[in-house]
Length: 270
Ligand code: HH2
Image (cartoon, rainbow, N blue to C red; front, side, top):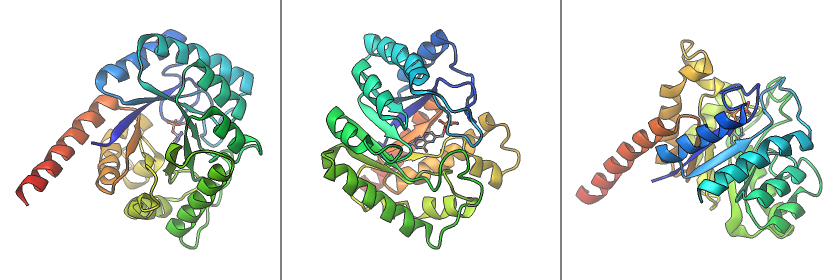
């Protein structure tokens, strides 16, 4: 079965769950609840990537993240990923017990990022984004979105490896919703096999994303997008993604278990 990464956003303004885990106690309780529900990985972040979100300084990110990472680590050996673009934040998070650097800029935010990833020796998620969070949805353009995303991910994985990151530490992510219109998101979801074929584990983040509301206007607010999130996660897993990044852990565990059981039965009876 694909692994499930539960999202713990320590932000006031995330599009999907802003403010849900802002108080430290709420964040730890939320993280522990996701572990009980069956999350394999927790993804903790302290800066929203939503267009228009407030930038957060490295010091503020560290001040929000490190106590939570330490508190989770004191109670659990679950894999912890840190969702940050900043090498200094990744370094502090790994020092506090995080195992994975989830970077929506694929180690391109600052020139030293690939070398820092190599130095930390942690796993690294390289995600595709066209543009930067503040303006990425202004006018996204592609001739062939799948070819451009796979070429970008190939280039970023080569840059990471050239800086000393081991091949087996690298995960790729097509970056659903990051500088992409509805048709770009759908093309990528329809051709995820091309990303999987690059030969790295693939992470997919579709949970509560805006493309769901573009298909179903009733899917507002973002917390009303669970059915669409599950449909997209199931499609991703069927295409071979290794990890799904989700806000609703228990519901996703249930959906993936049923999908895996059907797949197993198909294998036994075919
Ligand atoms: N999506 C978001 C944030 N980080 N990281 C990866 N690797 N892949 C994703 O698809 C991804 C990500 C956006 O979702 P969320 O964290 O809920 O919102 P915000 O960025 O507003 O905090």
